[in-house]
Amino acid sequence: MISVLILTKNEERDLPGCLQSVAWSDDIHVYDSFSSDKTVEIARSTGAQVTQREFDNWADHQNWGLKNIPFKNPWVLYLDADERTSDELGIVLRSFSGDGLNQVAYEIQRRDFAWDGVWLKHAQISPYYLRLFRPEKMRYERLVNPLSIPDGPVGRLGGFIDHYPFSKGLRSWWQRHLAYAEMEAMMRMDDLGKGTTFSWVKALFDPDFSVRRYHQKGIFYKMPARPLIKWIYMVFWRRAFLDGSAGITYATMQSIYEYFIVLKTREQLMAEGSSSK
Image 1 (cartoon, rainbow, N blue to C red):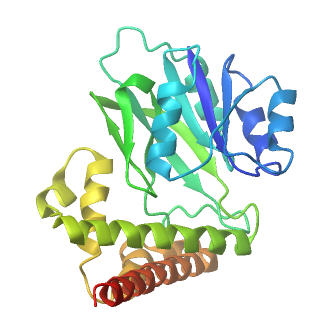
Image 2: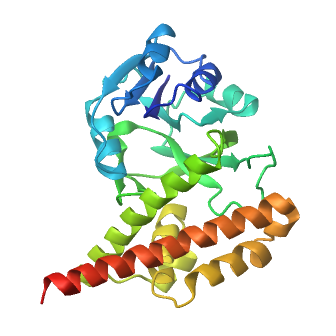
């Protein structure tokens, strides 16, 4: 009853483990952005179907995939190549039928693991993600860290998606987040240009986690000393120190990433000011 969608770009290192964790599915799709390594070869060797499209931004890329990939089953599980379904989640998904349910999507808890294998249980900011859904009922917004917008009720499943963001090393993590910072700055500039407003009520009380997160980020972008606020929030409010040195280090890295967004936004504001003279 469940198809699997895996997004890839040069994922020959992580893809085999991801594919192995979803081998129970009879319909696995690797959605590739023209990898130059053995990603496509690995995918096809396991019987996965491959669709290729040049990556532009997260929302447009994912929306195109949901509309154009010919899924065999009515439900789709979405994963990145550096993610795995846990044994517990695998049991839940194998027994999932979806028949007679009102829900159009399900949240699944994700466990992020540090470079040393420590589960960042407290440092992790976003624990639940809409990853199982009916593709015709799901769409995405935002260039990076896209907002999942289901067209209908949402439920929650047991089990975990295990995420290994440091599987390619610290250099790769920083390179990705420098690119993310640039896209976040572009969205901040777009919000400024449109005069977009964000709601404290929705940021705190909306029942949909994705909506809360969207408004929280919009409000957060307006705060001074954001990197410091983020570090204090992660270390003390979310108690990242309980994850040991990995938790403290991860909180520091996330705060530096936040500072990258600040710098990139300033850079774009300066460029816009110079061009208008």
